[in-house]
Length: 142
Image 1: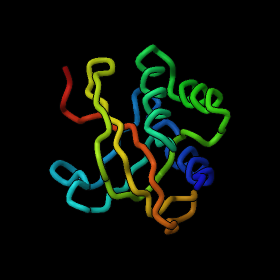
Image 2: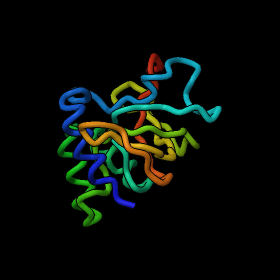
Image 3: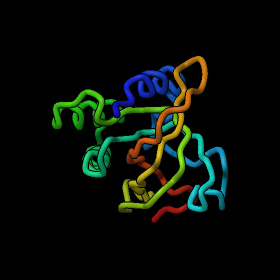
Image 4: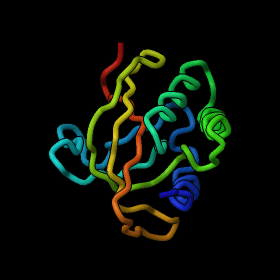
């Protein structure tokens, strides 16, 4: 399933919220409520269709690419303009796929199950779809 309207909504909704760093998720529930216990999370951040696309995005960011440039480069490389993008979603966190250090901060690729998205005017439920979120570990840096 493509999340193009989520991505567009996320861009309108988030604007410059993630302009200086990787997208940060798990901001609504706070510490100790990372969704591993089945709790719903709401966040704005970078999500991709596959973990490989999310890894390519992280590597581009680690190499100095800006968020927009990294997203466009990943999407161009896989010939899918909607492979990765900024989105405002409600989701349940599933599994951490990988973790690495980017610019001194632990960054993870996390499989998530998206259940709703923000379209700029309101939230809409969607059939659950698996995506891969790029998440910085707050307060954890090396």
